[in-house]
Length: 278
Image (tube, rainbow, N blue to C red; front, side, top):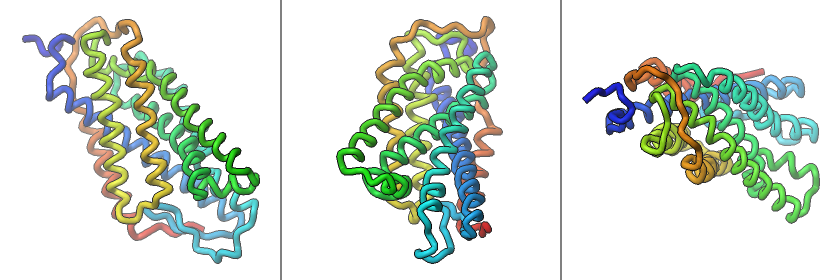
């Protein structure tokens, strides 16, 4: 049996290999977006003479409650979600500029886009329902419950729409493993590259934040489940996608997996102590 041919690649070992590769970049992209957002907020907080400490579970402001101003609240609690969405959209275009490239690293940019979408629209959804985080920004618009409900429903609808639109992008990442993506290997790939890594990656991130994870952030993390719904509904509607003309073997991305493991350990150990900012 020629292991390089697509028809022979649907094995348990290859399934696990793709899961490990994708999960590694899911975790790396998550922490990249998380640290980018938190550091940006910490720098912005300095403009109000606020100091903070970055921990593995959140950014803690070392100021008195009465020091908060309306401008500070609106900026600091909206900056990370907005920046995440902007960076995610930029990386989405970066990814599509790399679709013909077969390197596995490119899925990092696609996961960054998904994180950006979740950390904006998920934050809006969680904030309006729980009156936490981004919800503090919404409060300054003095919306009634009906207005908050509309915003929440819009957030869900937009996330579902974006996830549906992104399905094709995820399918194109199959060229890192197959010569073509057809009705025979499409389900195998979608579960290995998207569904299982999304579930496993989210679970690992939640576990890494225990016992300090708050319900607001947990709510946002759980909205990743919404991303799977349109993908599972749409992935079988696409025609066969043709990639490489020559067969190649599915291999483990040891560098990506090692980097993800190091990132998990460093963030949990170093940020357990906390990094003072400002």
